[in-house]
Length: 594
Image (cartoon, rainbow, N blue to C red; front, side, top):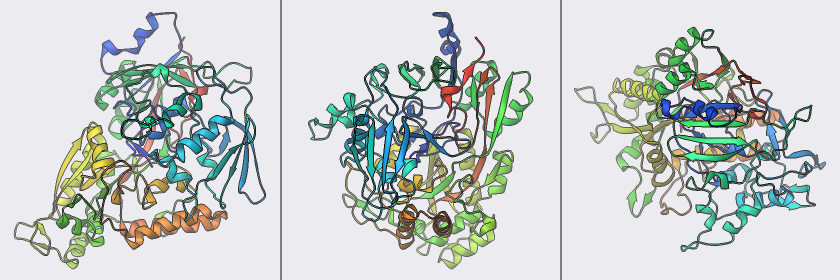
């Protein structure tokens, strides 16, 4: 899974952390309109985001936004309006009667952005040599592992255009995993077969953001041509992209795509209103203002209903040690690992007020890790446990669990330790910062002191991914149709199993890490759900996982905002959805301004 920071484009395979918001251009000197005067006018699309990309190497990416949905494609793609899979690099496929052999046939004359042929060799390379490679710490592994034994499919080339996948057992989510980008063997294989001075594949340092973006070989609708740190990324139409419209015209229609990098959502709003930006993901605090100016500003606000992602707080439940030092203060670890403590926190957060005040009523209370758009979603009406605002119940749970109050109404544990912890999130996201401030206030009402600290993005990721030096965090994950896209969260050794994170490859080992029974049960059920081909039985399995998560609360879910975006009226072809956002079909979007 990837982290979710309210972003109007889909980046879900596998689920990851979505860290920013499409915003706008920072200052006049960076105005992308200046590009138009430098040469003959070209059609372009301008959007923006709060932070720089972290890598240009898809296999090493673990967060969104990122550049990859613009520059890469897989064998199939997902229609983000219908949720159905459609042919992409593969024009067709055949499935054996036992559903364990699938043969994909590539389109004819596919090419990479450098003009070299894209063949079955690239598909086999991407899976066997990159995604299945034990030395490459990619989150793709978690969603393609099959069964209790964590086996990978066997992938082999049948011809230049045909690839056979053989599954060790039936695997219901298989087809959605084949939307994973195909990577260029001719450009990357050399970095997998050579080692650095520490004996690690050079691939791990390949195609970082210090690489000339024009050197990144891709197969998607766009290729990168320029990256200026903290300013912008400029994409241009990939002349070798395979899609053509019904009249034979090359796609995408828009020649230049500009991704401006800003630091403030307020700046995003100002620049969108000034006309410098073609699209803006709308947060609830901007909605009323933008709605009033919709006609005069010549833009349309799209509402896709509840967003497909999640927002939550989570406590660090890891009981392990590094170099003899506990990852989490043992006193605090005992609090965090007490189910009644987590339940009390859930009851103490006033989510209705959060929705009404911070989200301006433009959201829904969230109770499940599975998106409401998914057929596997279990609603409260269908029996999912929920935590309504009830501070008195929260206090009673704490008292029953052995906590107590002093004469200052401060919560103490049985050993008279004051209950106080830090909570981190990404700086620059006004909505998330407001949520953190309210949680701090809400928990103070039951005697808990929260030290809320928004952090720079890189610092935050370092704590979550590598040092595991955190107590509580406030973020979110992307969502989607297929629950197994979240296997990297729910597998006990998954790369996004943040609440009890295993050590990443190449970092200091962790000793003494414990797996709770309920944690192991969710892991088991996710494997079982992926094995089950009967849809009704799959729904029952994932319903059980949702009940367990709500009982034990590894994530305390908050509010799910409505997915909304404002788009200039001269931008045509928008098929907005909560699943895909604004630009999931960027190849068929047009700019009628020229």
